[in-house]
Image 1 (tube, rainbow, N blue to C red):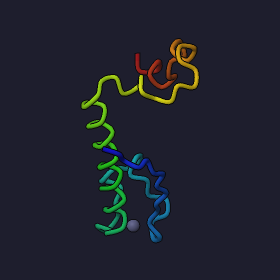
Image 2: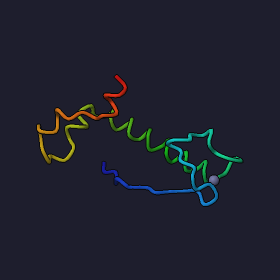
Image 3: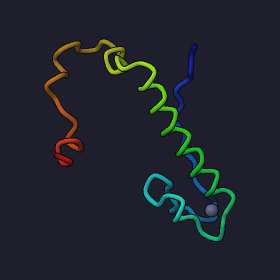
Image 4: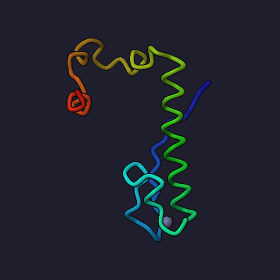
Length: 83
Ligand SMILES: [Zn+2]
């Protein structure tokens, strides 16, 4: 199965500052259909990532082999902040 990775840059014309990743469903004003759709796209993309990871725990190892073991000690700073 092949899924095309796509970059999606969507924005509501009436609520240009609405960002589902930050504002969530609570940030949708007046039940705006465009904002709701953006939020659903965002939620679906999160779900897709979760499903792919669950399907293959080795997912990260299948990433492009740019620098096989040199990248391993480098940790995501966002994760460090959570500890
Ligand atoms: Zn809107």
